[in-house]
Length: 169
Image (tube, rainbow, N blue to C red):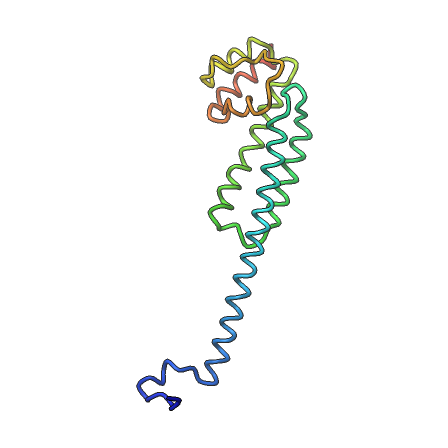
């Protein structure tokens, strides 16, 4: 039947004024969802790019790793990430930012161990400090990933002391 709703049900049936409000509300929701989708897609594409770049860096031979170039790559990726709108509060974005934030310290550590004054004795102290006594720092094929896997940031204060000692000797 197409008769008008009873007075008790009239509150649930849209009137001309509520139809406009509902229509506007749906449009606003649709726009917000579209913005979030676009932003999440942009974030996902950036995460894929970052993983690709980081894998390229990880796979570099340690002896060929240029810390200035690595730092430039990090800065570019971090800047690009900061330009992505509407994703800062998403858990995946926060996790990604946390991972990205580990890189400046790693780059500094990498730079320090590549210095000419960082010799085998200092390497011995470092691998002992990070509890990786079997680490072969004399391996000519050592990759940046192997250095990353030392997780020096967990022992940063002691690692910094070793770097300072190496500079003074």
